[in-house]
Length: 296
Length: 296
Image (cartoon, rainbow over all chains, first blue to last red; front, side, top):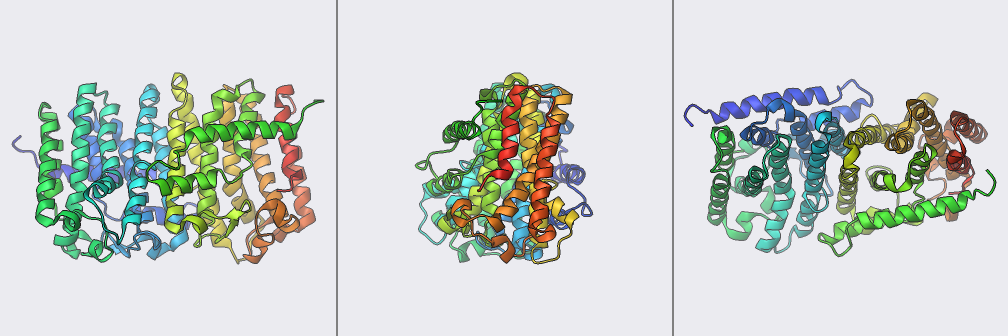
């Protein structure tokens, strides 16, 4: 599709999501101030908003509107943000730097960081519950979808296995488990949620589910590659941090070239999944490409 | 009401809730096993299930059935359990003992304890979303109610202020803020949720809200008193632990006798609130009395 500017699209949607998040989060002046400051600090630390944008693009690909899915898109970003705060904690990945800034516990202390994460996760479900009352059944389906993706057999499960596998030999199946759950599950759920809320047909939903699954895994492989190949300036993280902590990554398990090939292969799968979609899926197609080409 | 045995009632409901929780939680053998073990450890560590029982009793007081609110009652207990795991962490209250057993992080380590808490909170909302599809609007209202009570202007907010106030002079208004939010909010929400799900009239809901608010604060004051007066054998906690940590408590701020009077006063308020209710509110009346008379 000529004339489609993916960078402009991503920027526009990010700004829209940022404005909506501004309206959702409590102000810094609201009691307890320190807690609300800690919550805002990480939410507005310069995230790319990939999950909300994918959710919106998925909705639009089947004729839904950005406006009707904005709250759900924000809820997913709140869950993603809480997971980063908790992952960075000293007892977990023990990271000092995130998106080029000191991590939450470095600024607010460990207790406040744990509580800020807890409060963001809770706020996400509060927002999800304030969804479309005209289609309350759909809203409940989406809450279930997102909670399952975020829970013990989804994102949290992936993080648990990731932590356990640190410093140990990691097989490819175990590595895939970690990536598919820790990162992939919430991305897949975002794509599905956008479709469900836009009354996608079951055929469309199946196609978008395959797309979301492939893109979710590709995203994490690309992240692993950036940890080896990227610069600290562009990633905002300590480069080589994964290797130093002996984290389970694709480059470590299958080498960097194989990893790049696997990411491209997954993007092809994502593209094929939505081949039958019309021009309204152009954003989804471009995002898939962007995911492996980005430098942060 | 003659012949009403409150101890038998509490035991019966607790057993019912325990059976339901058994069906909700993943088995210890389910991957990731360590995470699921950590989740089960704290859920089945011998809690009194006061919040679920209050929720059920509230539902029954306006003609609702236990069966129709069981899942929501379990969800509230999962949220309560997650909050205990996180509160006990070294960076928070740093407690080694809970209900007479080593705390979660003492057994599973800090990272697993944080993740088990995260997963329990997420599971709670997953269960809430699987509520009554015939009345999805009501289910959404209850999710909002509980999320608000558990979030940054509810339970998590109370814990944040509690942590900040440790070791400092604490005024009575600040102490009330902590107790009303840290403990009271979820108890009040439990009572309200039972009523909302049982289609209580707005008059009944108002009365039960007053009941829940009074009972929630009384419960925490009674807990503070037990920390001074109780034995480790009966409370399962280190007695005097609050004083050692210079926690904000009622006995510390207003003395033990004043605290006991304040708790009794609140129970009177709770009783008055539901004075117009019929025999079906007998359990709520007896629970109110039990809360200040219990020894753990």
